[in-house]
Image 1 (cartoon, helix red, strand yellow):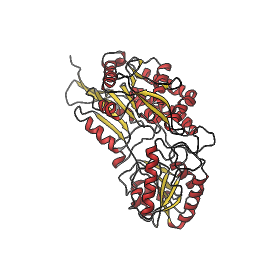
Image 2 (cartoon, helix red, strand yellow; image 1 turned 90 degrees about the horizontal axis):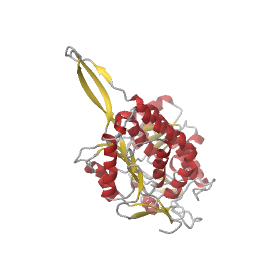
Image 3 (cartoon, helix red, strand yellow; image 1 turned 60 degrees about the vertical axis):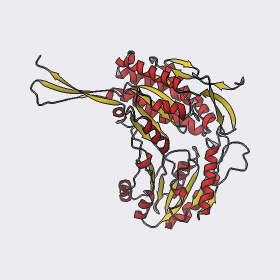
Image 4 (cartoon, helix red, strand yellow; image 1 turned 30 degrees about the horizontal axis):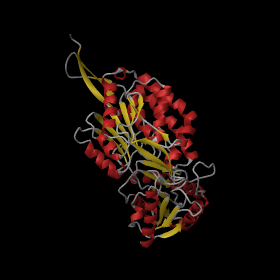
Length: 487
C-alpha cells in the first residue's frame, strides 16, 4: 500500500478489523482511472465472524430486549446527522462510482428522510388481540424480529438502497450484516461509522464486510444463521441468491432491474416532458438507475418535435468531472459498462435503428469511463436494445398511434419496475395506471420517491416491495399466543 492510498476496514462485533485473509481489493476512480483506496477482500472466515456476531447480539445480548422507541432513536439520530455529513459521504461515492457530486449530495440528504421515517415506524409494529372459541381463552399476537438480516447493496444509489433495508431491519429489532458492492463500498463503511458515533449500539447489531460475490456474497447468502436476505441488483445474481438460501429456507427480498417506459401524448406539456425524460435517463446518474426511463413511446403527431427537443437537450448536457459544479453527467462506474453501451448501439444501428446523437465516448475527455447521452429511433420493438437493461445513458424512441398500442409496447418487457406518463387527461392517466405493469408510476414527473411510497416491480424486476408503512412487517414475524385466564 502506497503512503497516499487510503485503506478501509471491516466492522465486525463493534470493532474495525482487517480481513482474515490479509488480502485487499482496490477501488478505481471512474473519472480518473486511478486507484484511490483499498477495501477488505473478505472470505468465509470474515462472513462467519460477522454473522456469528450478529446472531449473538440478537439472541444473547441486550439488543434482544431493546425497546422499540430506543431503536427508533438510533435511526432518528442518524437521520439528524446525515445532512452535515452529506458532503463527506458524497465525496466517497464520487470517488468510488463516479456519480455526479451534486446529485450524490442531494441523495444523501434525501436518504435522511428515510431513516427518520423508519425511526418513527419502530414502535408501530403492534400486535392485536383476537377472540377464540374457547371459554376463558384469550388470544393475542405480537411481532418479533425475523433474525439476522444480510443486506446486499449495489453500487448505484447505495445509501438510499441501504436505508430501505437497514431502516426497517433495525426498527424491527433485527441484527444486520451489510455486504456492499466492491465498486462502491466506502460510503457504506462511512455510514456505519457515523451510525456508531451518534448512537449507543451494542456490538454485533450492525456489521459490514466487503468483498466480491464469490466467496463473500455466496458465503453470506448461504449462511445457516442468516434468516433473511435483502438484495438489490440484477436478476442473474438474484437467481443465485435464491439457490444459496434454499438449504436454510431464508426469506428473501429481491429488488431487481428495469427497462422502464415513458409515454408522451400530444396534450403533454412538452417542456416538462423533455426535462423529465432527460433527467430520468441522462442527467445526474448517467442512466445508472434501475428505473431509468430508457424506452420512449411518443405519439406520432408529436414524435418529430419531441425527438428533436430531446436530442437538443441531450447535446446541451455538460459531461465531465463529477466534482465540477457545472458538470451534469459523470462517468459510468466501470469500463465494461462503456463497452456494453457501445456494442448495444452498434448492434442497434446494424438492425435498422437511427442514431440521433451520442453513441460513443466523448472526444474531449482523455481519461475516465464516459459515454455520451444517446438517442436512437428504432424501427420496431423487436430490437435487442429495446429489451436489454444497459445501465447507461441510452434511450430508444418509437412512435405510437393510439393509447392501446402504447400500453402494449410498454408491457412488452420482462421487467415491470417504473413507468412515466405525460398527459393532462385524467381518464387516460387512470387507464394507463391500471393497464401498464409497473410497480412505480410517475405522472408528468419522473424518478421521484418518498418513504411512504413502496418500491418494487413485476416480473424480473423482483417479487418484493420495500419502504412504506408495510416495511416493518417485512422485517418482523407475528407470534400467536393463547392465554388461559381461568387459572
